Image (cartoon, rainbow over all chains, first blue to last red; front, side, top):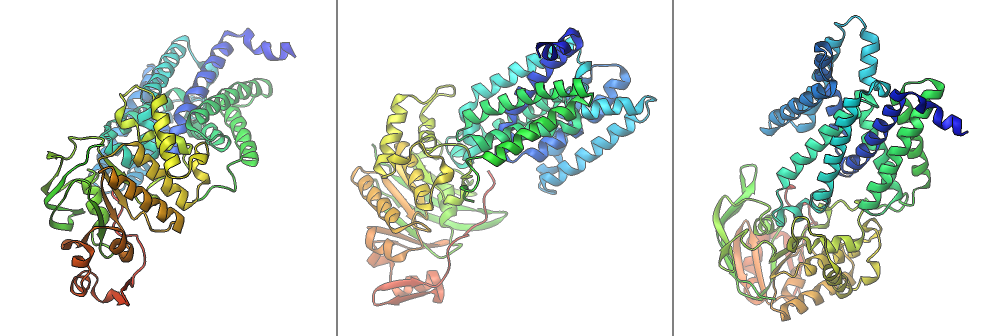
Length: 275
Length: 260
């Protein structure tokens, strides 16, 4: 049994993979709590897809994939703001157009590479075993920064999410806090593509947080339970991936989905929520 | 608690280019308890949103304590219509009431013992101290209303604005709300309450503001509720039967939601 648990760790790339998956699992789950409560799941999914061209360009140029993703996320977020700001088209329409366009551009770029199928699948569904030492440091630093942002602005994020009217009356910088949340979401998506890929990043943002929502009554406990579920799914998913040889991202997301189904079945919230 | 003098001068406000309030002017003396009445779409909610700074004014000015809006951050408490809130958010009743104290805290400061004590006391005053640790998802409409009144109390306001507090709640919550207003009146808190219930306005408030995009009348209930004024405000929708006034219309939605 012990050997069963430790054997993956004999490889250093597996050790790095496990640490990366753990960090991403925790980070996505905490940020995801806001995504679930603020109804931003579509935006999270869109951002994840929209970073594909950045990853592809970085890949073609032999640069850092995460950096490429980071630049693309910022460009797309600004683009969404630009098209929807004037009020000419609705925000979700702008998101829909831009994320499909960016995704199409990304696929077009990657399809020009000879080893197209393998590369695309790594980017789409994650390649946790390809995490380099630099990627790991970058992920760890970003995780700490984002968790710090959450800790510093905890009270303010809660008010703008629960009661925007009160937030405005308290003269909170509501617009600034919203942008800060968008940036957090963008950064989280960028690091999550390492483990679950652009196709499944939204699941890591939403599924553990939604499971935790069903099991808890207060925001702090929701975030903690969400982080535990995210970390647990990541680790269990990687073991499954290692032993039955399936894509790591899929294994992690399916594990999280199982936890969600259990949470849904046993949730004390069900049946007593008024709309 | 200090009381506040509220002066509104020539304000114009509205949504998407359309004006809802046309050059409205009035002033509310310190410690006044004022009912705001008018038909659907008259601009009652719009007026409140202007007073708390949720909706920008296109012209005119609002002054509190002789200073423009925004100068005194925490002296106005506002209880919006209950559908403005996500009632499935994972917070307890006590969490919500403690939020009323956030305006007095620094950015990083956590609410302390005193803030929790004030919040619990406010809940007791509203008769729902026993619900402090309940999830807000479990509350009935009347209880939701009491939670928001308790939060407004915890804010320690000089001016209290209640938007339709008597709509869709049980009779005992209506009574608790009135008792609270009486109590605050004694403490010199200025209160403005919008309502569809003309009889409540006539019998329980010393001053009434009747509006329909303009001010139609402002004064004591006897001065305001004349057949002529009611006809101007409501057209043929209002019937006065043996001293009881009945308005032939249904309840909100009144104005489009503001995006903030």
